[in-house]
Length: 181
Length: 127
Image 1 (cartoon, rainbow over the protein chains, first blue to last red):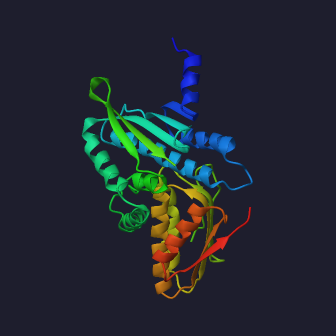
Image 2: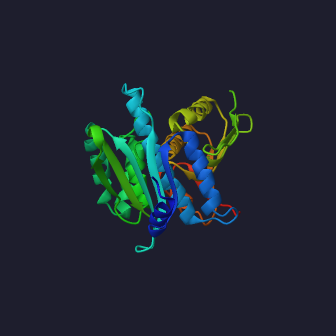
Image 3: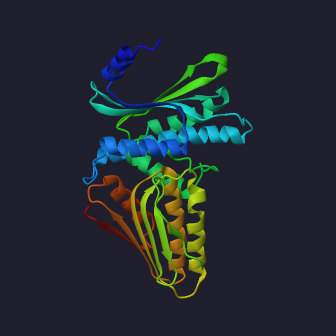
């Protein structure tokens, strides 16, 4: 039985500000962003950290939504977009963090790994140059997007993004992404 | 040419084109569900505009934040605008942003660098 006191303690110990688990759609994303804007963005005064949170949140969630949309295109029509997102404040590092998790198939691991590994070792200037080059050439482009998501996330993060693939039942994997602002 | 009049939504900007006046305004946030689909009519409009004789164009962007695919689309838009400029039209791009919005400022600077042939102005707006 879910114990709310334990759950709340875990959230508080880890500085969780907002979390969502379940079905993801564009509509749900826009609603979440609106709610977050009220919660952490102030209306009349511009807040750079809030902007960065929103943009990374959007990139991570749209990555998940597009991943599942791509799978449906590939024939897995029943495939529903589900994921988990956590926004929090790491008290030790004194940094805002965003984590996302979604199930992926083993055959997708190589591409995701390659995409992320190609950006985590670059410095700010290299990231900017790479972004501008890929944007210009459209090399990573697909039907759904420009293929610049991880690059954009790494540009806005304050340290190399971290990821892992966690084995779940029936040979699916949970792709987990950690971003520190 | 038919003008585009789109109202702003939570994830897409308002778009207002005026062929007669030679103006385009884009204001709001940009993270559409399918970014390429959303901006295709605007790209078509700009391509159509660039093929007409004589007209000059003032393009105003005021985008609070945008996803990475929007960044690609804006790049493609400026590409078409630069071609129109090479055909002899006067094209002005006003990239408006809140002075505290560092990301918007940097994005504007990047575009300005990439498109030196365009008259690309960075304009700060209070409030």
